[in-house]
Image 1 (cartoon, rainbow, N blue to C red):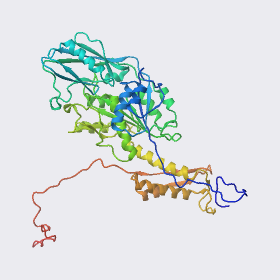
Image 2 (tube, helix red, strand yellow):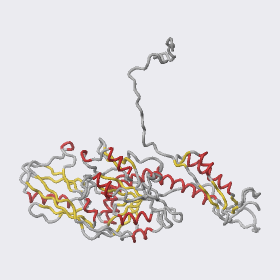
Image 3 (tube, rainbow, N blue to C red):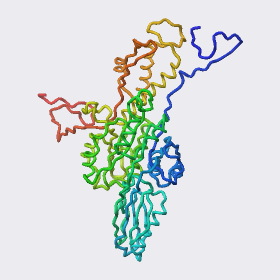
Image 4 (cartoon, rainbow, N blue to C red):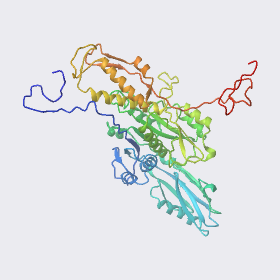
Length: 524
């Protein structure tokens, strides 16, 4: 019986018709590619800490993690950029101390108007009357904050025109919440009421970084293709880089094969180096070298907090890479993010240097919406510390993951219980047997499919370099040298505009409108 059946036994004698269904040649790869947001929950949330929770709406996030919590705010930023992705959230316990700041009304208004506060990038309008005192305005600020429960802060007891501001969770990320006013200025119709002046004590003193050990352990083998992480301290990044690394136990390692990417953001500027560009290059660039990690560089005066930028960046990357992992992310909008004022934005030369240093970049043009400029990873050097651009871009691993998943699906579906023989073995048709040549043909066919889908190129070179052989020490094992040429992206369009004021009349030219060459000039 040359045909290999998996279920119908050879010695069965009872008539008549029996059919065994085999889907091995029919299936196509389906990749869920869920996203994961990691952040702090507060006591008001009912979800357990360190346990992944599926989220489909902002209302669910508010109930699970507490309205205005770090994780709730990150979910809002994510959904503003990607509403269709399968989304999970991983809530972690808060730190030790909550960040605090103060909005102080220095002088009262002399005329009525609207104070346009911005707290963590959220617009908080406050109506004031001409007769309001500093205490009344401060109380109005507190009331306006209380009326917006989605804010990441609460207002405290007003004293002498000062309204204390406290982050809803304990931890260092509360320090990144910006307090400001009239961001859009006169052009946007935001003008300070006459006479009214405010002073700000920036958010500070927030302390504590979550421990991700239990959270990562509880994630287990659950798929999480795109991770939004609001922390860029060494301890946090090391934990997630290890989980997503190439080691035996990493998600990109040979045993687990989950793959995936980590997206974060970092604001430039520090007490030691106030300039955002210099601080990012000096205090962060070069400190990481992970192909799976992409950190978005931000100006010091961006209004939205870094944890929301990380969520927005992850969301837009997930949306695009799920559709096509090989297309560049440049020009994709980071919706709901409030960028730095025009005068503070990175220059092109600064963006270029940040990209070379392993930081992802963003730009804001005339429409006022920040856009991804280049999705760089932190991987810039090889094992010997020499410059290496193999993993420079997020699209490289994203494309490779898609190609490997396609190949894995084809092999595991078509050859789940096959025998292995040498090339040239004369076995009957229908036998569940593979040889190195038949597997090589399958890999070539799959490569052509990937080429058609725009994931790879140069099929001839791939064929010439592909090696499939039986292991010399294990007759049950096939070894494959798989050399795909990943498709690249159009990132630079360079033009040498070699203009003339007048072409030499002695050169053959076409007579305008005649469609025929002009007569040759004598002597030419």
